[in-house]
Every structure is written in structure tokens, then in C-alpha cells.
Length: 214
Image (tube, rainbow, N blue to C red; front, side, top):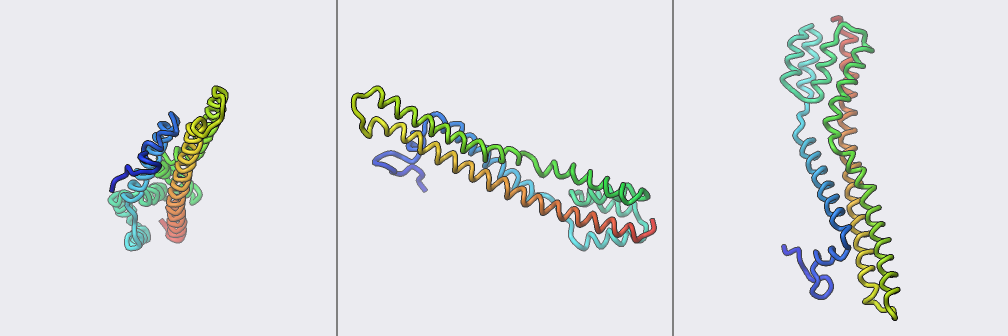
């Protein structure tokens, strides 16, 4: 599919965007950063292993039978965030339940850092991009009045350049901000669902060892 097409006369879509002035370059950079972070985090989330119910049942049986070493080996072989949290609980067996829970919670926070990655910057871009577009609006208005001050008469040709810069940078800045905003909250939603699952597994683990004499 050909991207370059006539928008106004013989002007291509790319040429129209470039009418936004120098601010289009940082906005273009922010758009690339947003897309990169979104794709990188989605790929990371997709590649992370998850444990299923048969795994949990097997772990439950081993803990009930007091085979803690085998349970630790089972968690180590799975090598995922959930099993590392459960492994931390197994390593602290014999301590008060509150201490075990705190250790598992701490391990969960360490795992969470891996999932957060650079998502923070999506939130920053969601706020910065529209403001950069607003700067383009101000720059375009200044350009319009400057052209008027130099001319003896007012015409569309005098103010068209400023209007291009004003409207294009505003539109592009808002578009990038919206994309970054949606991406930021979507990724956080995915991670929050994982955290809820970790917390549920941790509670079930605490209940398990609370009912089993180890």
C-alpha cells in the first residue's frame, strides 16, 4: 500500500506532516519510543511462563508430605515469577506465618520491577506529547502575527504557514499522547491482573502451610 498520497493538490501525507515545523522531529521520536515500549512490554508479557493447576496440586501434595526439597526443585524447574515467590515461602518455612508472607511479598515486588520495565515513560510521554503540540500551537500563532506585522495587507497565504504549524503539531501531539496513555493503562491493567493472581497464590500457600505441620 502506498503511504504517499495526495492530500491537498500534489502534497503528500509526509509533506503535510512536515508543515508542522521543527517540533515534528521530537514528536516523531516520542512516537517511536511509545511504540517500542509497548511492543517490548507486550512481548515480555507474552514470553513469561505461567503455572497451571496440575503444578499447584503437585506442589500441594509435596508440601503436605513434608518433601520440601522436592517442592523446591519443582519450583526451580518451573523458573517463573509465581514459582520464585512460592520458592521464597518454602525457603522460610518454620518461621512465623507473618514473616513468610512478608518474604513472599518482598519477592513479589522484586518480580514486579521486571514487569514494569520502562512503562513509566509511557505515562511521561502521554503528558509531554500534547504539551509539545500546544507549544506548536503557540509557535504557529506567533508566526501568524509576525507575518501579519510584516505585510501591508492580510491574506490567507500570509497566515497559512502558521495555521499548518498550529493545527498539525496539536493534532500529532494529541494523537501520540492518546496512544501512550492507552498503552500505559493497558499494560498496567495486565500487570495488576498478574499481581492479583500472585497474591491469591500466596494466600493459598499460607493457608496450606498453616494447616500442615512442617
